[in-house]
Image 1 (cartoon, rainbow, N blue to C red):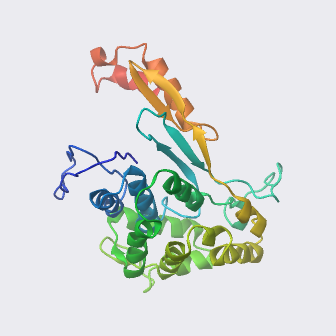
Image 2: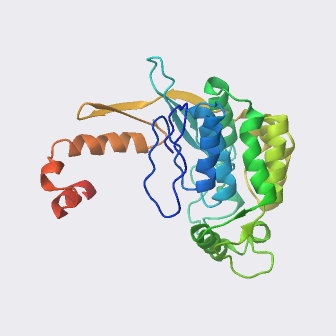
Length: 298
């Protein structure tokens, strides 16, 4: 996701076009609905963090495979005014009941036991509290509405849901939530409605992020963990904290490069790769040459 504070936004490209130009700012995500949500937040006077929060919450609705409020992540923020970029770290953490050898000999990589304490809501809330501009409720509202009313899925989302159901279809709750009501296969153009998620988002909008970690949603998570042999307790949820950390910083041919720090390997590895590639004249080799591809891949 790439976001820049914007005062105006370019118009949406027509269907089939891959190039969009924006003179002041842009919101990019894997979901058109989510990107449009972030764009609309910018147009209404929100800043980049407001747009990031609204986009992430909409991804929880429109891109179920990866966008979610039950996981975690990182948000890299440039505060402006000469201040250094920072990273909001809301990676999932291991429950207190986890142990170093709990998966030794384990062949099942799904189910309640593998679930970490989710950080997404705490992280988005921390980013909003530190850097946001618009009210929290306003950022949650678009995702709540779309979850309740439903949206037309595209071919990629249809394929994604079908793939997940085929792999994890023996979980009755997953099939209840994501199975097509008429028991047929999902197709592009079908409408996905998620009333349970809509109620959860409405609770988060009305009661704030604490509802997820200390309120009704937290109690539901704990009850599900207990029913399925999971490890997350009420104390694990209540004690979860997102953190603001310094970003990893490197350079590449005169440009500053920032990324998330540990526990993410991404920022460190990205800078390391760029530093190695800096020694080669890739432009001389040609953008699509086999030699340039070989060096980049290697």
